[in-house]
Length: 144
Picture 1 (tube, helix red, strand yellow):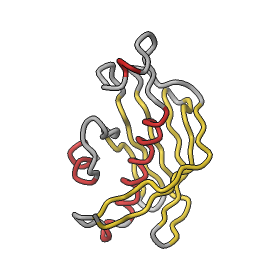
Picture 2 (cartoon, one colour):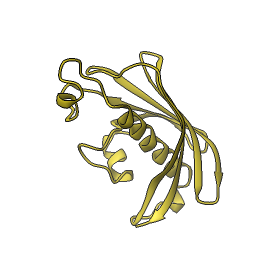
Picture 3 (spheres, helix red, strand yellow):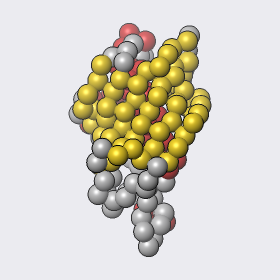
Picture 4 (cartoon, one colour):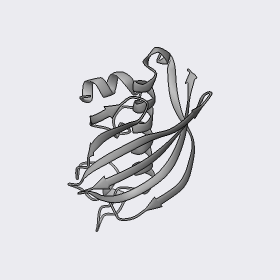
């Protein structure tokens, strides 16, 4: 899924679109996406000027966007122009190492279960094959 397909599915736009490409997807199972982290990101001048680090909350947001893409790929018949996927919970979030300018952030979302409108995913963000963050993420679909 290239950036144009991502933009068709996610309502996010710069500076909050945090998925550049989907490189692998098995609907109903998992999805792997990429976020190219550049020095031009709007948060780096303030976080932190001496040693730029991507805020952990934005790493979690990138993972949440990947879960939304997996949910949409899993049930395309439920995707409507006026529907949105909302983040409803994050459990067990852990940050293992910082994400810096120049890193390529791999975002993996694995569907754990779906109960009615609630989707539960196990997620992992990694750089160079090393985990930088993990979390269990819940989201739901709502009509806007």
